[in-house]
Amino acid sequence: MFEQFEWAPPDAILGLTEAFLRDRNPAKINLSVGVYRDENGVTPILDCVKTAALRVVEQQTTKSYLGMQGSPAYAAAVLDLLFGRAHEVVASGRAVAAQAPGGTGALRVAGDFIKTMFPTAKIWLSDPTWANHRGIFQAAGVPIETYAYFDAKRSALDFASLLQAIEQMPAGDVILLHGCCHNPTGVDPTPEQWEQIAAAVHQRGVLPLLDFAYQGFAEGLEQDAVGLRALAKPGCEMLVCSSFSKNFGLYNERVGALTVVAETKEAAEKAMSHVKLRIRTNYSNPPAHGAAIVTTILEDDALRAQWHQELAAMRSRIGEMRGQFVEALAAAGVARDFSFIVAQRGMFSFSGLTKAQVDALRERDSIYIVGSGRINVAGMTRENMGTLCAAIARVLAD
Image (cartoon, rainbow, N blue to C red):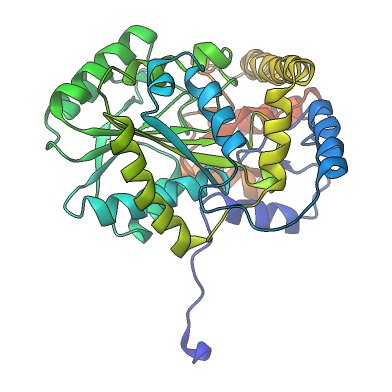
């Protein structure tokens, strides 16, 4: 039965990583996959994570299953980090969270929930968006539309077109918004624009689904939640898919959550009962270890303070790489103005490189960049910066 198969197309991002691993060039550079790397090109284990992991192992008494919704202590920690424990949606009980295997797992459960509970709803994705968003919601059977987001000529948010698109969305549809560090563009709305987006979404009767994978990677934990909290108006409804892969460096632990915010506590609990059915048919219950590490850190004042410091160091390095990248491009003789990269936020930058230029960088110099031109700035180091910018200067000159 399997002989009849054709080769499946490689994943737009993970397929590049596979090709990178096969590449024997010792000077190869991977700027494709969304993983933070330090100055030595290593994805580090945070010191607070090491301490918490040892504590978890020492205190664990069982490896039995968690419930479908996961750990209650973890859910409480998630809501505290997203909204703050004094926020109205938390205090009223109308926000409830379910543990999920990473942000991707949360998104797929959300997709199944939308398809089952709102069978006529479409989901609106930004143009552009993270490559796997389309695949996830297609797999869940949710019809997909797109809304304008990025002005490539200005390398900036096309805010007027974004608002116009929201005003034309049918009531009952779902809009996927990136909480911060928009992937792939690195361009976020301002706090004032978030307020206008929230007003337009609620007035239109569209359900917001916030993909919140990078809290703390733009300006700080509180500052990065400004969009989420703008949407969390009294009586509002929303879905939030959050992840701790990046800000805790827990990539292979798959630690995420799906949060439901409903108009009332009872409505939230009813919605969660249906979320749990979707969890049951996906993975039954989530993995425990990574979530226990996150909970341990967030419940311990000293570990939480240490995490804040380590997160700030990662955020600072990303900002430094943005500035050095722009300076090194100019030093390499690139005449094009790349100063917009400094204003972008988070790990990603929509560089403006064409697919042909991206292909040339891979074939000539073993530099791996997503075909859209999205660059993972966190993959840059002082050591590889000169090689990278010289190669980009060559392809731009062709």
